[in-house]
Length: 553
Image (cartoon, rainbow, N blue to C red):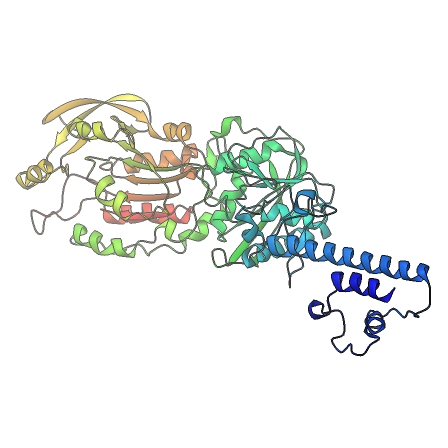
């Protein structure tokens, strides 16, 4: 009996290869010693039934070891879940999450989420992924504690490339969550963009936009409009933005005109791309307000408007006005231009709908559009559309090749729509002027007729203030340069009277007065009636009204 059992034992459990058995088995009764090393005490005379039970126990242990080793290899080494084809006796659950060592969050590497060859396996276990999920989980847990989000909220994360926000929501129990991005990353993110959300009206209780995606959107107004459309009344939207100045904050609120502000908080970010974050929480009104197509700004009531406080604060940061009349204005301009505090150098302009430069009295393209605005004005990588308002036909041909980016209005900016009679008035030293004009600088001027002498032309004038109110809205960013040969004393009051002044964010104004002549030292021009003191008063009144205006020559 012993010899037959020894043969069976040595076949399945060879002593030299098994780490589970003692290597010090000696003596004639080595078979019994092997039994003892297994922790099973057998008496030599137990009979056939005891021998059979021992054989069965060892066979069972052997089978279990094979299953354990195979399972450990498939899961830990190859990263696959067990299937029958992999020589496993059971398979893993379809949505099994593996906990990342040293972290409290899971990475999605189940069968239905990410295959073994999918590069996202490394992404979901990376430190960056874990850090982002930790951060967003904390943010959402705070919102839950404040009653702004609940586990039952149907939630959308807008423009989330990788879906960390969606995953964080699911981790804290907000299961009904999905994200959108221009390229899908299922199962967390489906295809869609902020300006065109692929869901029905009033679909979600909670919408989140992180990563400063609203800041960088090329269509922020459409972005906000789509959020308003798909969010249920009384639902909450939370946005994370980089911009933290008062101007940008109010610009963002203008985009969400049908929402009420709940709170705003500044916090530290979780990566170097966004070290500081401003979190803004808004709640959708139960009734959507209609502003009549958005042409008339909220700040304008009838024909009046008041410049909001956040714009008034910016005026205090502007460069000081030049109080003493310069003897050589053209030299003073060159020096002063380095001191100009441009609005985009002080604030973030990301949350504006459109960006426009209105050049009133544009002259040639190279006069200010090409030589100054295109090259020097800080645009924050925004694309500006240019309106060139120029009545002098001499310059119209230059704009034919600029139609895609410049809209020419071949009229005279005026206080009403009417035909004007102008005389072309030449300054002293006209030979020098004509030479400059040939180079495209357009030094010749058109003036309202004051006498019967000189060259006379008829030009169509238009109500500039009304045109502005019908062309731009308060959600647009509007920069204006005005060089209208003294007509500024008519146009500026008209802008205030109609309320159109509130639509302009920044003005570069050339005020015309009887200044010293370049051609003739010691002589002042009789071309204009106003004095430098009157021009200075015009600039001062504009700034006191909260308008960011700069002196221009």
